[in-house]
Length: 170
Image (cartoon, rainbow, N blue to C red; front, top):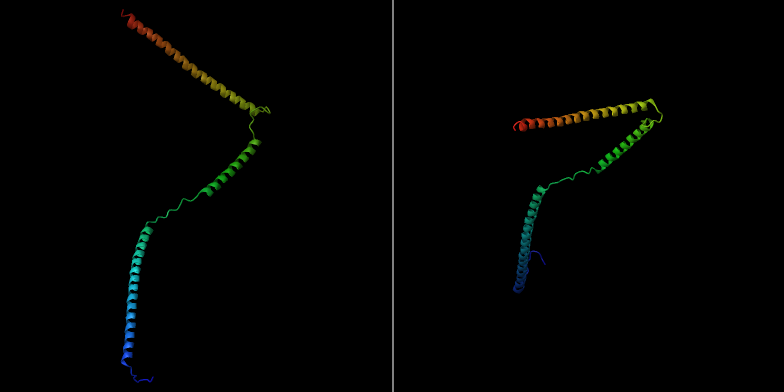
């Protein structure tokens, strides 16, 4: 072909080419319309999904605002175990020291050596028991004596009433 020159085309060929072009343009327009429908459907679906997402986000925000975090109480088991072990160790140490002291300085109850300390202790015990017996005896004698006197007095009082009220009136 030569540039800037016109070529002659017969009418049939021109009609065929134009018909083909029109058919292709119609197909392209139909395809564009079909694609536009698909795009619109996708846009509607996206809008619907966006609404659902917004609802989920708002419900999550509401739930997030209502969340309360509570921490469980700390376990004191290790501390109590350490404390109980320490108390046991302390008790054992104190008992050992006391046992050693009492084994060195024991108090004599029976006269193993008939020492002066034993006789002094036994004399004090005897005095305390004797004093206790005397006090109990005096308290009971005064109590029973006054009780007996009251009973005698009431007997004499009854006799006096009898003589005064009944015997004199007859």
